[in-house]
Image (cartoon, rainbow over all chains, first blue to last red; front, side, top):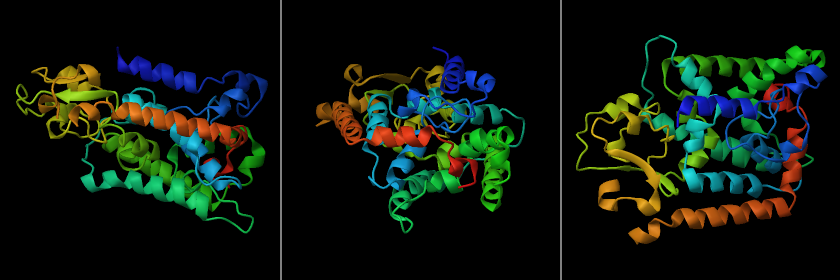
Length: 281
Length: 47
């Protein structure tokens, strides 16, 4: 199956509220918004028809009633348990945008490995802890990741909504300028580094990455046929060498390594039909 | 142990479904809907 058409179709399905543009409705308000899409897509995008899981997690934690979003975590963990981080590589619209931006001719830079841990810090601090515990006098928190960082929110909601609604334009201020600056920085970084946001910042990727080593569908690698030619590394948008660990947390299962391996040493399959573990990891 | 490890995904999936169901049972989906159906001012950069 070709990945690019799959990504495009997913992005369109996720953002398919074209009817609203003709009806003059700024965002979709129907029942599909009970459900989170298992990818990173702002629910305040005028075209979005599902809820954003990261926004939803923060919204639940920031409210009066609960401090942890079991519903959203359960949904994401279910996806992760079956396919690991594959959603990042196959259905995430923001991942697709990064891949297109990285095609712009420019010098390309490696991302230092220690920055890979940044996404876990964002998940823990800004998505889980701060919305639940940094609350006002009424006990209400804020979705701090959405508020202070999320470049997808700025791109998909922060830019189009003020253009569509004049009452929002009049309220733009310093926080908007901060978010816009962060978006510009990320867009520039995406041009010069492969999947910069996914690798360093994405809280959703951080959740999925925890499941890569145990998921039903997993990468396998044959140590006896691998010649360590680094073709996998040169193809990998996440900068991984398969022979260092076929199911590393950052692997988005785009399968470019498998498709380009000159010795056919890489496979993606169901755990029960795996070759023996001595060969797989 | 290696054979058991091949089924960790199943345990994770069962736990995930149980968590999700518990979340829905206690009304989190309504919170998600209420947030998602209104304009997220924080996402825009206003809130």
